[in-house]
Each structure stands twice: as C-alpha cells, then as structure tokens.
Length: 329
Ligand SMILES: Nc1ncnc2c1ncn2[C@@H]1O[C@H](COP(=O)(O)OP(=O)(O)OP(=O)(O)O)[C@@H](O)[C@H]1O
Ligand SMILES: [Mg+2]
Image 1 (tube, rainbow, N blue to C red):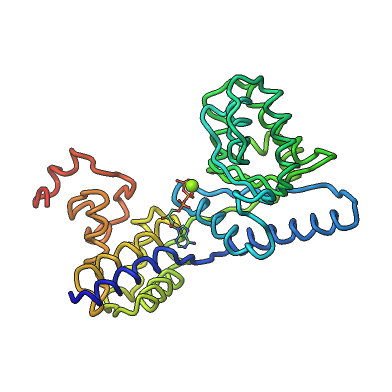
Image 2 (tube, rainbow, N blue to C red; image 1 turned 90 degrees about the vertical axis):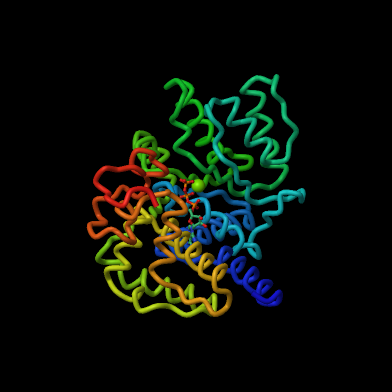
C-alpha cells in the first residue's frame, strides 16, 4: 500500500468507528430527552416547577446503551452545556460503582461532578454535598450507566436507600435533577417494584434484532457502511441468508451487529487498501479473530449456524471439538 493510501485507510477506519447509526430506540430517546429539556427550561424561565421526569434506557449487553447516551450528549451540544471542565455542567454522566452502597454511589456522583474525594465522610454528608454540587453546577440531568448494578452485591436495605435517595434528587424542591438510567433488562424488575419511580421514568428499550423483520435493514446498513468507506461489496452479502448469519453472530444485538460490520470493513481495508471489496470471508475472519472459533462454530461458515452460541469466546474444548473433523484452524 502506498503511504498516501495508508493515511486514507486510517482516516476511513476512524470515520467508520465514529459513525453512529440511529435506530428506533435512539429516536425515541432523543425525542423524550429534548421534551424533558424543553419542559425544564420553560419551568426555569417562569419560575414554576412541574413534576420532573426522567428516562430509563434498557437493553442487553452490546445493544448500544452507552453509545446511545454518548451520541445523545454529543448531538445535543447546542442545547445543553455538557463540558465537565466548566463551572456550569448541565448533564453529568457516570457508571454505577460496585457495590452500589449509599457511600460509593454518592462519592462516584461527587467525583463525576468534579468534586474532590471525601472518603471519610458519612453517607448523609456525602449526599448533602452531592445535592449542593449539582445545584452549584446547575446540573439538569444525571446519567447513571450500568444501573442494573444498583441491585447487586448489597443488602436490601442499602439498595432501598440508594433508590430512594436517587428518586429524591428528582423531587428536590431547591434544585431537582432529572435521572437518566441505563441498564440491562434485569433493571426493569427494580423499577417495577417501585411504582413511584416507574411513573417518573419514560421507558426506552433497545429491542433485539429479529432475523426475519430486520433482514432488509441489516443489508441496507452494510451497504451504507461500505458506501461511506468507499469500497465495493460482494454479491454474497446481499442475500437474506447473510443477514441472518450476521444477526445471529451479533447475538441479535444492534450494537454488536454494527461493530462486526465496522470490523469486517476494517479488515478488508487493511488487507486490500482502497481497492477492497467487502465479502462474507471478512466477516468469517473477524468472527474467528474475536472468538477463535473453528469453522464449524463460525456463524458465517457453518451450515447450521443457528445452533451456535455466538457469545462463546475462546472455549478451548471447542477448538479441539470432536465433531469438527478439520480440527483447529
Ligand atoms: N447505533 C450504533 N451505531 C453504530 N455502532 C453502534 C451503535 N450502537 C452501538 N454500537 C457499537 O456497538 C458496540 C456495543 O455498544 P455499547 O457498548 O454501547 O453497548 P452497551 O449496551 O452499553 O453494552 P454493555 O451493557 O455491555 O455496556 C460498541 O462497539 C458500539 O460502538
Ligand atoms: Mg455499556
């Protein structure tokens, strides 16, 4: 590859990795978010306070929750001040710490709000500081990622205190803060156990892909990505069978599907440069690279691909599986 071409290839790959493909769940998330923001601005302008609401974003691992929130923040830059290095920061985003005790969650929020650690303080002092800091920074939204961890590794009492404290942030009369919670499906149980919380949160769910309904959309997405990369595409990627293999390999998750497409194009570009032509073999090779799966366990190669567990990574026994006569690759 010529040096110029190599620079181009690198630039294209970076561009593909940064590309965000909006799906139905994202459009809903964006719509709700803008609505909540609009309401809040209107309330602040006339000094009134209507009941504050938030959003809960649910999806399995790899569905694209974290990426969706990041894109939401990026694409609403003009409407919302989100630079954490500035005094005013209208949205603060963090991951729920583990174990999600009152103290740990409070300290994590404080840290995300740019406040120095205060390990030796009591939980109630920490939460007073959180409320103060959120008001001082004029924070309108608090996003907690991995919200399912609020239910893990802690006592029932502690869990209830954390949930009530978070809920109370939305009800704070001096400075209410809207919650955006993203987490795995088991988090729904926690929300449904608390009707008060459920009523305050608009639900958005990233649905799993369907191997019949989403075939057209998946083929279209692959074509749009190759178009964006400016490379060719083989006929073996235009059929329903390929789409179903890709959906299965991604374990029916939208994010993982997009990630596989980007990786397959990256592989094609790295091997053949700007003349690359994306084909089924690139997908097979990417799957092999990720899982070390033999051909018989590779959804892009195996005849009966639906019986394969696509999440299985580097299972040593399967590499020497007796039912695969070719043995390890
Ligand atoms: N809409 C999208 N367009 C393009 N790529 C996406 C999209 N959504 C997700 N992805 C890609 O899918 C992968 C997984 O997404 P992400 O990490 O956001 O999933 P998640 O739901 O947060 O998973 P986890 O629960 O494991 O944290 C990432 O590589 C991301 O870049
Ligand atoms: Mg995530």
